[in-house]
Image (cartoon, rainbow over all chains, first blue to last red; front, side, top):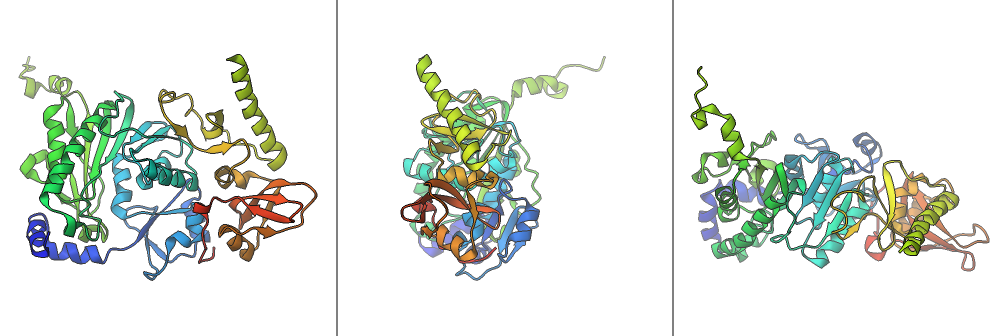
Length: 310
Length: 147
């Protein structure tokens, strides 16, 4: 897409100038892997110049020259840190997996969010990392070994046909997308038909992931793109076609814009993170619960019309 | 079937005995060892989870001999056959180089550490008087900083 066209398109979502200026001036972040070293121990030994993020204790913004290669540091080699953008770190916090739970990451490779979830689960419970591509699975294994993750299985299923019914307490679906929020040249290669095409896959993956949730379980759907066809429309399609799917509030106190209310007022619960918000890549995040909507309505006299006035 | 199961159980026990005898490593209570195309170490409960039985692989693949992945995860627990490296040695070893050494008359696996952290697995070759680097090529790094 030509620059002017993209400018017009993105301006419908957010301030184009601010978004693109922040996109090209993104900061580099990393996460401390507390499975291997506590934050105190890390602070004691690391000489990497970095500042702690105000939004999460284990997230740091790198304060080194652009030529500094974090992948060649002792901290990286020893598995004490993992380079990861701030919005990507925050996605796992939105899902909030707990120790002892059964958790699934549908598209886990190369394992940044996956390894963060293992850390939040304190390396306990069951964490299943799935990815459909064999070559990406080897990258996932490298991450698992380097960061000392012991609570996981790795599987290679088609994310749009997982065929697990009611198995997981929490599921992350960070769906394949057009990457307009993260890829430097993505906007040049992109046109709206790409979003339409990939949204078919995203819809199937979301249905499949939702099916794998236990009743009352929670799912986070995220992408690193801005197109509503890949974000709100995908979530709306699920809400319209299954019983009991509810959008949940996201309680992270971070700069963001709300989801597009053209799809319904409840979409304001979704987060649209643009580069200007966190000096990092753009993300869309929605949190969904599998709850029995009919049962919930039955409990609400105002909705069911039950006379409780005595 | 019983024979097979017995063979598998022995592999686990033998590996555990080897770890204790050779490295002095006792695995943490929060972990368990099981067999799935090699001896594997996981957090407790993973093997018995209802997910098991239909899925692929579990971390951490310890193999039948210790693997580098195993040593990088549990090498800090070793109190035998572990050596502390100087900065120069540690950088060389992390980059994939073997190290010259004369540490006995037996070939053996070694844990190589730097400042309390495990750099990787080495294999002492008494003939060559070297510690052979067992860090997989993809894991090797030319380290640029200091801790």
